[in-house]
Amino acid sequence: MTRWKSFTVETRREAIDSLTHFFLTHGSLGMAYDERQFGPEGDPIDPLPPPEEVTQLTAYFPWEANLHDLKKAFLEFLPVLARSFGSESSAFVSAAEITDFGWAENWKEHFKPRKLGKRIVVRPSWEPYESVPGDVVLTIDPGQAFGTGTHETTRMCLQFLEEVYESSPGPGSALDLGTGTGILGIAAAKLGASCALGIDTDPKAVETAEENAKVNGVQDRFAASFMPLSTFAGAYDLIVANILAEILIDMKNEIVSRCAPGGFLILSGILTEKSDWVEAEFGGEGARLLKRKTDGQWAALLLRREAH
Image (cartoon, rainbow, N blue to C red; front, side):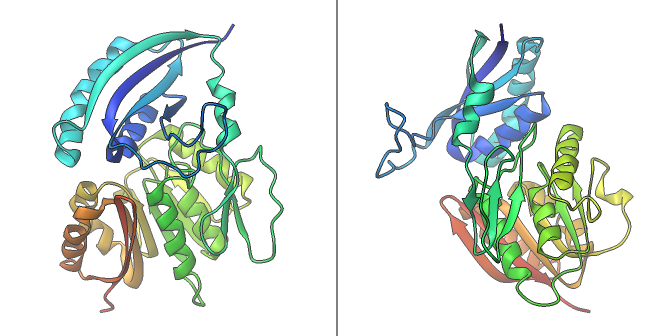
Protein backbone atom coordinates (compact mmCIF):
# COMPACT_ATOMS: atom_id res chain seq x y z
CA MET A 1 0.00 0.00 0.00
CA THR A 2 1.41 3.35 -1.08
CA ARG A 3 0.91 6.29 1.26
CA TRP A 4 1.72 9.96 0.74
CA LYS A 5 1.05 13.35 2.25
CA SER A 6 -0.13 16.41 0.38
CA PHE A 7 0.03 20.15 1.04
CA THR A 8 -2.25 22.45 -0.96
CA VAL A 9 -2.04 26.21 -1.31
CA GLU A 10 -4.03 28.77 -3.26
CA THR A 11 -1.76 31.01 -5.26
CA ARG A 12 -1.58 33.59 -7.98
CA ARG A 13 -0.31 31.92 -11.14
CA GLU A 14 2.84 34.03 -11.40
CA ALA A 15 4.01 32.75 -7.99
CA ILE A 16 3.95 29.07 -9.01
CA ASP A 17 7.65 29.09 -9.96
CA SER A 18 8.73 30.34 -6.55
CA LEU A 19 6.41 27.97 -4.70
CA THR A 20 7.68 25.05 -6.77
CA HIS A 21 11.24 25.83 -5.72
CA PHE A 22 10.13 26.23 -2.07
CA PHE A 23 8.38 22.85 -1.94
CA LEU A 24 11.21 21.04 -3.76
CA THR A 25 13.77 22.37 -1.27
CA HIS A 26 11.52 21.08 1.53
CA GLY A 27 11.44 17.54 0.18
CA SER A 28 8.48 17.47 -2.21
CA LEU A 29 8.38 14.52 -4.59
CA GLY A 30 6.28 16.36 -7.14
CA MET A 31 3.54 18.92 -7.65
CA ALA A 32 0.35 19.47 -9.62
CA TYR A 33 -1.82 22.45 -10.34
CA ASP A 34 -4.91 23.03 -12.43
CA GLU A 35 -3.79 23.75 -15.98
CA ARG A 36 -7.33 22.98 -17.29
CA GLN A 37 -5.86 21.43 -20.42
CA PHE A 38 -7.97 18.25 -20.32
CA GLY A 39 -11.71 17.75 -20.41
CA PRO A 40 -13.73 15.40 -18.17
CA GLU A 41 -13.00 12.43 -20.45
CA GLY A 42 -9.27 13.14 -20.53
CA ASP A 43 -9.31 14.64 -24.02
CA PRO A 44 -7.52 17.95 -24.63
CA ILE A 45 -9.73 21.02 -24.40
CA ASP A 46 -9.95 22.89 -27.71
CA PRO A 47 -9.70 25.80 -27.63
CA LEU A 48 -7.80 26.14 -24.36
CA PRO A 49 -9.56 28.48 -21.94
CA PRO A 50 -7.63 31.50 -20.67
CA PRO A 51 -5.80 30.67 -17.42
CA GLU A 52 -7.32 31.96 -14.22
CA GLU A 53 -5.24 34.36 -12.14
CA VAL A 54 -5.57 32.14 -9.05
CA THR A 55 -5.05 28.40 -8.94
CA GLN A 56 -4.46 25.67 -6.38
CA LEU A 57 -1.03 24.06 -6.20
CA THR A 58 -0.65 20.70 -4.45
CA ALA A 59 2.75 19.38 -3.39
CA TYR A 60 3.21 15.70 -2.52
CA PHE A 61 5.58 14.42 0.18
CA PRO A 62 6.78 11.11 1.61
CA TRP A 63 4.67 9.61 4.38
CA GLU A 64 7.24 10.56 7.02
CA ALA A 65 7.10 14.29 6.17
CA ASN A 66 6.14 16.60 9.05
CA LEU A 67 3.29 18.72 7.71
CA HIS A 68 3.21 20.88 10.84
CA ASP A 69 6.81 21.96 10.28
CA LEU A 70 6.11 22.44 6.58
CA LYS A 71 3.17 24.73 7.28
CA LYS A 72 5.29 26.77 9.67
CA ALA A 73 8.03 27.13 7.01
CA PHE A 74 5.42 28.06 4.40
CA LEU A 75 3.94 30.81 6.59
CA GLU A 76 7.46 32.17 7.17
CA PHE A 77 7.99 32.15 3.37
CA LEU A 78 4.86 34.21 2.64
CA PRO A 79 6.53 37.62 3.28
CA VAL A 80 9.16 36.70 0.68
CA LEU A 81 6.42 35.97 -1.86
CA ALA A 82 4.61 39.16 -0.91
CA ARG A 83 7.63 41.29 -1.81
CA SER A 84 7.61 39.88 -5.33
CA PHE A 85 3.95 39.18 -6.05
CA GLY A 86 1.86 41.20 -3.60
CA SER A 87 0.34 40.60 -0.20
CA GLU A 88 -2.31 38.15 -1.46
CA SER A 89 0.01 36.01 -3.58
CA SER A 90 -0.56 32.73 -1.69
CA ALA A 91 -2.51 31.19 1.16
CA PHE A 92 -2.60 27.80 2.88
CA VAL A 93 -5.60 25.65 1.93
CA SER A 94 -5.16 22.12 3.32
CA ALA A 95 -2.87 19.26 4.24
CA ALA A 96 -3.83 15.62 3.92
CA GLU A 97 -2.71 12.02 4.14
CA ILE A 98 -3.26 9.97 0.97
CA THR A 99 -3.49 6.21 0.51
CA ASP A 100 -3.19 4.37 -2.84
CA PHE A 101 -2.93 7.54 -4.89
CA GLY A 102 -1.25 6.92 -8.24
CA TRP A 103 0.06 10.43 -8.95
CA ALA A 104 3.72 9.37 -8.73
CA GLU A 105 3.43 7.51 -12.05
CA ASN A 106 0.24 8.91 -13.59
CA TRP A 107 1.64 12.43 -14.07
CA LYS A 108 4.18 10.98 -16.51
CA GLU A 109 1.40 10.33 -19.02
CA HIS A 110 1.20 14.08 -19.69
CA PHE A 111 4.95 14.76 -19.94
CA LYS A 112 5.61 14.25 -23.66
CA PRO A 113 8.47 15.21 -26.01
CA ARG A 114 8.18 18.85 -27.05
CA LYS A 115 10.03 20.94 -29.62
CA LEU A 116 10.73 24.24 -27.88
CA GLY A 117 12.68 26.11 -30.54
CA LYS A 118 14.07 25.61 -34.01
CA ARG A 119 16.26 22.68 -32.93
CA ILE A 120 15.80 21.87 -29.24
CA VAL A 121 13.52 18.99 -28.30
CA VAL A 122 12.97 18.09 -24.64
CA ARG A 123 11.86 14.56 -23.84
CA PRO A 124 11.57 12.50 -20.64
CA SER A 125 13.56 9.28 -20.56
CA TRP A 126 10.43 7.09 -20.67
CA GLU A 127 9.10 8.64 -23.91
CA PRO A 128 10.60 7.62 -27.27
CA TYR A 129 11.37 10.30 -29.84
CA GLU A 130 12.53 9.89 -33.44
CA SER A 131 14.88 12.79 -34.07
CA VAL A 132 15.44 14.39 -37.46
CA PRO A 133 18.70 15.90 -38.72
CA GLY A 134 19.46 19.12 -36.87
CA ASP A 135 17.53 18.24 -33.72
CA VAL A 136 19.23 18.84 -30.37
CA VAL A 137 17.47 16.38 -28.08
CA LEU A 138 17.59 16.93 -24.32
CA THR A 139 16.54 13.97 -22.19
CA ILE A 140 15.43 15.55 -18.94
CA ASP A 141 13.82 13.86 -15.94
CA PRO A 142 12.75 16.31 -13.24
CA GLY A 143 13.50 14.19 -10.18
CA GLN A 144 13.27 16.61 -7.24
CA ALA A 145 14.23 19.71 -9.22
CA PHE A 146 12.60 22.40 -11.34
CA GLY A 147 13.09 22.66 -15.08
CA THR A 148 11.57 20.46 -17.77
CA GLY A 149 11.22 23.11 -20.47
CA THR A 150 7.46 23.34 -20.11
CA HIS A 151 7.51 26.63 -18.22
CA GLU A 152 7.59 29.86 -20.23
CA THR A 153 10.78 31.13 -18.58
CA THR A 154 12.75 27.95 -19.32
CA ARG A 155 11.40 27.83 -22.86
CA MET A 156 12.51 31.39 -23.63
CA CYS A 157 15.98 30.70 -22.20
CA LEU A 158 16.33 27.66 -24.46
CA GLN A 159 15.29 29.74 -27.48
CA PHE A 160 17.87 32.39 -26.63
CA LEU A 161 20.52 29.68 -26.23
CA GLU A 162 19.75 28.48 -29.76
CA GLU A 163 20.19 32.02 -31.09
CA VAL A 164 23.48 32.59 -29.25
CA TYR A 165 24.93 29.35 -30.61
CA GLU A 166 23.79 30.00 -34.19
CA SER A 167 26.94 32.08 -34.67
CA SER A 168 30.26 30.32 -34.97
CA PRO A 169 32.12 30.00 -32.78
CA GLY A 170 29.54 30.13 -29.99
CA PRO A 171 30.39 30.80 -26.34
CA GLY A 172 33.03 28.37 -25.08
CA SER A 173 32.21 28.48 -21.36
CA ALA A 174 28.75 28.71 -19.80
CA LEU A 175 27.37 29.30 -16.31
CA ASP A 176 23.82 28.32 -15.33
CA LEU A 177 22.68 30.01 -12.09
CA GLY A 178 19.79 28.21 -10.38
CA THR A 179 20.37 25.15 -12.54
CA GLY A 180 17.53 22.94 -11.21
CA THR A 181 17.45 19.88 -13.48
CA GLY A 182 20.48 21.26 -15.33
CA ILE A 183 18.42 21.72 -18.49
CA LEU A 184 19.94 25.07 -19.52
CA GLY A 185 23.55 24.18 -18.78
CA ILE A 186 23.15 20.82 -20.49
CA ALA A 187 21.56 22.55 -23.49
CA ALA A 188 24.56 24.90 -23.71
CA ALA A 189 26.91 21.89 -23.64
CA LYS A 190 24.98 20.11 -26.38
CA LEU A 191 24.82 23.26 -28.50
CA GLY A 192 28.58 23.71 -28.39
CA ALA A 193 29.92 24.91 -25.03
CA SER A 194 33.22 23.25 -24.19
CA CYS A 195 32.48 23.52 -20.46
CA ALA A 196 29.39 24.44 -18.46
CA LEU A 197 28.81 24.86 -14.73
CA GLY A 198 25.40 24.69 -13.07
CA ILE A 199 24.96 26.13 -9.58
CA ASP A 200 21.98 25.54 -7.30
CA THR A 201 21.47 25.98 -3.55
CA ASP A 202 19.60 22.66 -3.36
CA PRO A 203 21.86 19.57 -3.18
CA LYS A 204 19.01 17.41 -4.54
CA ALA A 205 18.81 19.61 -7.64
CA VAL A 206 22.57 19.26 -8.10
CA GLU A 207 22.22 15.48 -7.90
CA THR A 208 19.42 15.52 -10.49
CA ALA A 209 21.40 17.83 -12.80
CA GLU A 210 24.46 15.59 -12.69
CA GLU A 211 22.35 12.52 -13.46
CA ASN A 212 20.73 14.31 -16.41
CA ALA A 213 24.18 15.29 -17.68
CA LYS A 214 25.18 11.61 -17.74
CA VAL A 215 21.98 10.62 -19.55
CA ASN A 216 22.70 13.29 -22.19
CA GLY A 217 26.34 12.28 -22.57
CA VAL A 218 27.78 15.65 -21.52
CA GLN A 219 29.15 14.76 -18.08
CA ASP A 220 32.63 15.61 -19.38
CA ARG A 221 31.47 19.16 -20.21
CA PHE A 222 28.84 19.90 -17.56
CA ALA A 223 29.29 19.91 -13.80
CA ALA A 224 26.84 20.94 -11.07
CA SER A 225 27.53 22.30 -7.60
CA PHE A 226 25.69 23.73 -4.59
CA MET A 227 28.74 25.81 -3.65
CA PRO A 228 28.35 29.60 -4.05
CA LEU A 229 29.61 31.29 -7.19
CA SER A 230 32.31 33.06 -5.19
CA THR A 231 34.11 29.73 -4.73
CA PHE A 232 34.72 29.45 -8.49
CA ALA A 233 37.34 31.49 -10.30
CA GLY A 234 37.27 33.01 -13.75
CA ALA A 235 34.77 34.54 -16.15
CA TYR A 236 32.26 32.90 -18.49
CA ASP A 237 31.43 33.57 -22.13
CA LEU A 238 27.75 32.96 -21.38
CA ILE A 239 25.72 33.24 -18.17
CA VAL A 240 22.11 32.04 -17.92
CA ALA A 241 20.06 32.95 -14.83
CA ASN A 242 16.41 31.92 -14.68
CA ILE A 243 15.52 33.33 -11.27
CA LEU A 244 13.31 36.08 -9.88
CA ALA A 245 13.84 39.71 -10.90
CA GLU A 246 14.60 40.76 -7.32
CA ILE A 247 17.32 38.12 -6.97
CA LEU A 248 18.78 39.02 -10.35
CA ILE A 249 19.07 42.64 -9.28
CA ASP A 250 20.57 41.72 -5.92
CA MET A 251 23.23 39.73 -7.83
CA LYS A 252 23.66 42.10 -10.79
CA ASN A 253 27.21 43.17 -9.96
CA GLU A 254 28.40 39.62 -9.32
CA ILE A 255 26.67 38.28 -12.43
CA VAL A 256 27.98 40.92 -14.82
CA SER A 257 31.49 40.86 -13.33
CA ARG A 258 31.68 37.09 -13.97
CA CYS A 259 30.66 37.52 -17.60
CA ALA A 260 33.64 37.88 -19.92
CA PRO A 261 33.86 41.15 -21.87
CA GLY A 262 31.78 40.67 -25.01
CA GLY A 263 30.02 37.71 -23.39
CA PHE A 264 26.28 37.02 -23.32
CA LEU A 265 23.75 37.15 -20.48
CA ILE A 266 20.38 35.39 -20.66
CA LEU A 267 18.08 36.50 -17.83
CA SER A 268 14.58 35.20 -17.13
CA GLY A 269 12.16 34.45 -14.30
CA ILE A 270 11.12 38.09 -14.79
CA LEU A 271 7.53 39.28 -14.74
CA THR A 272 6.91 41.42 -17.83
CA GLU A 273 6.21 44.55 -15.79
CA LYS A 274 9.64 44.21 -14.16
CA SER A 275 11.68 43.62 -17.33
CA ASP A 276 12.45 47.33 -17.89
CA TRP A 277 13.70 47.55 -14.31
CA VAL A 278 16.01 44.56 -14.77
CA GLU A 279 17.25 45.92 -18.10
CA ALA A 280 18.06 49.30 -16.55
CA GLU A 281 19.85 47.81 -13.55
CA PHE A 282 22.02 45.54 -15.68
CA GLY A 283 22.61 48.34 -18.15
CA GLY A 284 24.11 50.33 -15.31
CA GLU A 285 26.58 47.47 -14.83
CA GLY A 286 27.65 47.55 -18.48
CA ALA A 287 25.35 44.90 -19.99
CA ARG A 288 23.55 46.12 -23.13
CA LEU A 289 20.17 44.71 -24.20
CA LEU A 290 20.24 42.81 -27.49
CA LYS A 291 16.77 41.30 -27.51
CA ARG A 292 13.70 40.79 -25.35
CA LYS A 293 11.16 37.94 -25.40
CA THR A 294 7.78 37.75 -23.70
CA ASP A 295 5.57 34.73 -23.18
CA GLY A 296 2.37 35.31 -21.23
CA GLN A 297 3.23 37.20 -18.06
CA TRP A 298 6.94 36.37 -18.28
CA ALA A 299 9.89 38.06 -19.98
CA ALA A 300 13.44 37.05 -20.86
CA LEU A 301 16.36 39.32 -21.77
CA LEU A 302 19.41 38.68 -23.94
CA LEU A 303 22.21 41.09 -23.07
CA ARG A 304 25.87 41.46 -23.94
CA ARG A 305 28.57 42.73 -21.66
CA GLU A 306 30.42 45.67 -23.13
CA ALA A 307 33.96 44.86 -24.23
CA HIS A 308 36.69 46.83 -22.45
